[in-house]
Amino acid sequence: MTKKKAIKPMHWAFMDAPRCGAKTRKGTPCKSPAMKNGRCRMHGGASTGAPKGNKNAFKHGRYSAEAADQRRAVRELIRASNRQMKEY
Ligand SMILES: [Zn+2]
Image (tube, rainbow, N blue to C red; front, side, top):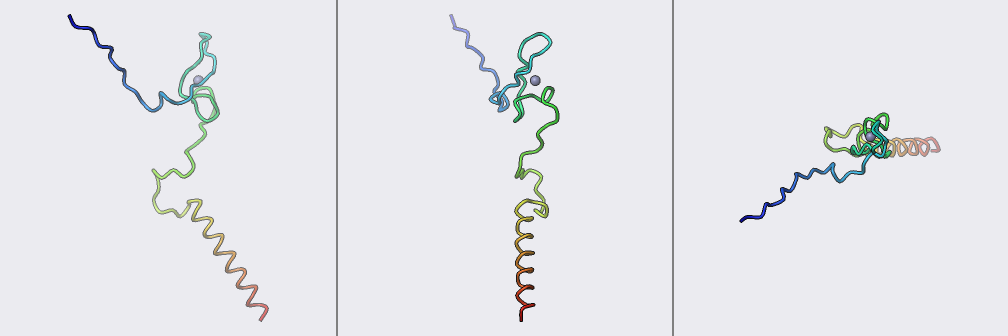
């Protein structure tokens, strides 16, 4: 006699995600994986977009936030140095 083993269902990362609480036409909660706004893709309107700092699509960094900050700093430095030069 062998005891039947419970089959462990597959476990995916989205199963741990917070659930959508919208009420379905059946009256039960929706239970689809929720976005940051607490609603799933069907009930929460537009997606909240790609996460900030996504490195999956990274190619060269020309448009990254860090690069923009750096360019701003360099621009400030040039302006400051031009101001200095005018004084002499
Ligand atoms: Zn939903």
